[in-house]
Image (cartoon, rainbow, N blue to C red):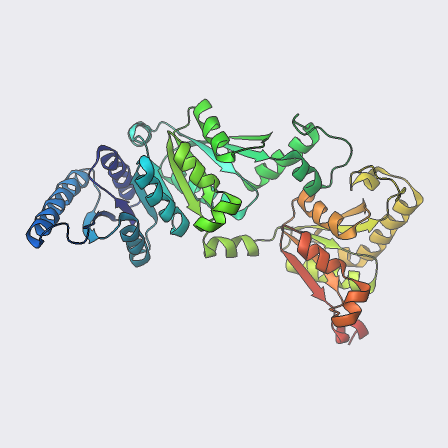
Length: 445
């Protein structure tokens, strides 16, 4: 693994190269210093092009010599073509650990950064000022980081990058999560009349607990309702906290996708006056996130298929994992239009909720004896839409995966009878494991 640094020999590029050299020295990896030369068609004679190339290579050697004095192993490369294309080609060829660049303003710098951000599969560090990094390296002064956190796996990738930085030196990390209240009320299954602009303590507590579970080691976690440009708010928070570095995950969206969905990472890069690290989600990160199941929600209706889903769900997680067993009942007043909390039945002593709890206890009794290492948690939910309640409970309980049984119907029977499992797959933000009961398992053979 290597560290890649692009330079145009400007003062900011020199500061970025210094930071890159220090990081390379710390991890005992080579630093590859790259400069791109671009000639327009018919602009210069061959002699002039050769002279420019020799001048660039001489500057690269001088820069490499200065960086080598820091203890880094430096290799130089002079490439031809647009800077973003040259750097991307180096990334594909070298598979570096990190790409480091100096900050550049103006439309040309934005276009280059945009192209790199949409195509890069390695973290991109844009250095605005080397001074905080110098104090971090020489005096051990903690690097103050603000992490822009959302619900996607790209935040997990950003956190992994921060963990690597902590290997270089101490870091004080503050995470900021921005949310739109109506969206969160619905995602978590909260009911009642709630304000759209005042911080709701119940929702805030759930979100903070959710983030603390996802972001171990983060010094401070803040959540706030927000409508507008999230990237600008993250930058504002970094300025208020006098942060040294802003870290955000990157989804690697194309230019067309950004027109529809926007790009928090690109907005942060354009607005920030601090250094910025944009960390993409790689295939390896996605696989790791998808296979580390520490908790599971199993939905059951009390049938044999529900029992089968319970056994599959318990087998899918490791010993010590939490297994949340969920059953959904109709609201006591199904005609009411008032929204209600899906967990309202947890505190209810109605006859129907008591019967549902007794059913869950009976259905899980044998399983508890067979798999005592699993921690079973029983929940009776109340909702007009079982599929929606299951998806909402998965968010509220912060499980890693949802498991439920399916008959695997197709064609006319599926259209006629419908499928709660299909609806959960459509609504859920988390992985869904479908336990399809075979004919053999139905007959007990």
